[in-house]
Image (cartoon, rainbow, N blue to C red):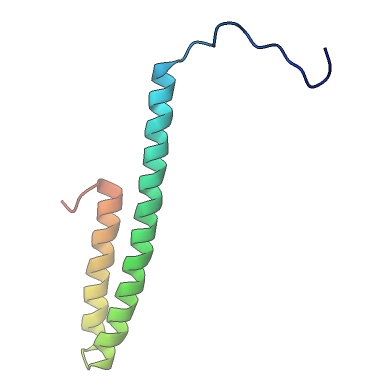
Length: 85
């Protein structure tokens, strides 16, 4: 037998459906996490733009900061607890 030849078993190895199911769920979970991360970045950019716009239009900085803080607190609450309440 040369270096490039190998023997293949006559019967394919048994599939472990439980392992395959977990692997599929892990893959979906990773995809969801990536989408959530992208959404969080988009929300952060939007919030940054809104803060600049609010300050430019004359809304008091403390009020803008308070509103922005409420938004970021909501985001963190959703991430930590899975919901707002």
